[in-house]
Image 1 (cartoon, rainbow, N blue to C red):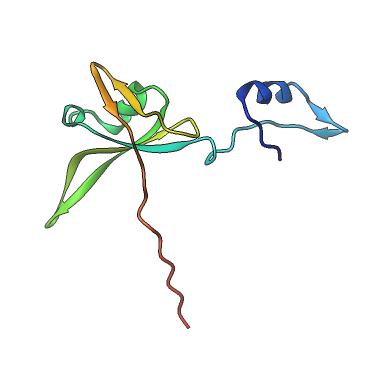
Image 2: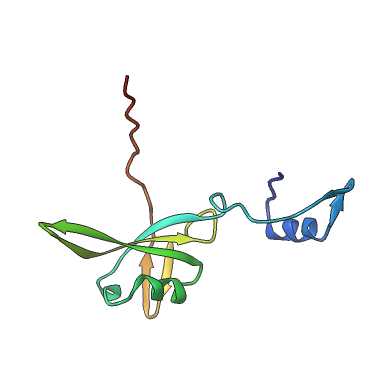
Length: 115
């Protein structure tokens, strides 16, 4: 396994079929080459998560945050976006809107050990 700094380096390495008679394959690392950010917009309330992925540049996944009100789950104006780059952009264009992208901070995960 090798870590490369650019797509250009990956293309050059990908042109090599073998290295010392060892087959070489080049593929991007899934978690290290993506990042998450959060956007908020009332104007995107009518857009589905699939539409956001199709229309927003560099977005590979979208998940709308929902809150529970009694038995119901209500969609909010907050969306967690996964980008195809190691760092999320600071802003993103959605049609005529320019939206700030805030860093995504997941909830902590706790492990419970039993004796």
